[in-house]
Length: 241
Ligand code: PGA
Image (tube, rainbow, N blue to C red; front, side, top):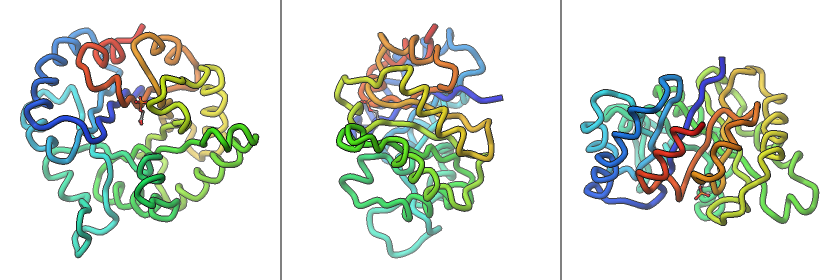
């Protein structure tokens, strides 16, 4: 069975105080959330520990936004798997397009981070997606296939979530057609050895398009940026119809 995973990616937003305020407002929405939906919040590193302490009932899982491949070492600015699991983090986003675009992340480093995440007991959410230029040039299928192939070398597909995030749809309000997202996600699935990997869609997911997105048969959840920052809108998203 494929699990439904609804994850919020807070990027570089929210202090500890703001994170706790969000949680207070968000908690009541969870009363209506069906048990078979995994709800994940990927907060900045600085908010993880305090969020973890405030979520003792475990209805919301915590995620980080990156992880290094070594357990410890001279890697200024990085964070390791054991540092995250120690404070109760369960998931980690790996290979987000903003990391690839602005911080030099490559398929090779993404692959190393994925393997390390699994080694230290975290479930990675691997992000893949094409640029507008690549889409217009008819390269979407080959770009995605290539990312999946390179990123997943020696990665355990039993402990993995994938997010298809067309880069042109991120933060733009320009959501990918749901049928098209469904088609690309089907292609990704056809490349996997484990057909039960949960594959999310990400890119301008909002309260007003979530129902249509989740109605698609191949889509097992969403990775939500902007709309996960307000309790009201993320509450509507986790409680999609
Ligand atoms: P968005 O971001 O929902 O704001 O488009 C999605 C993401 O970057 O994961």
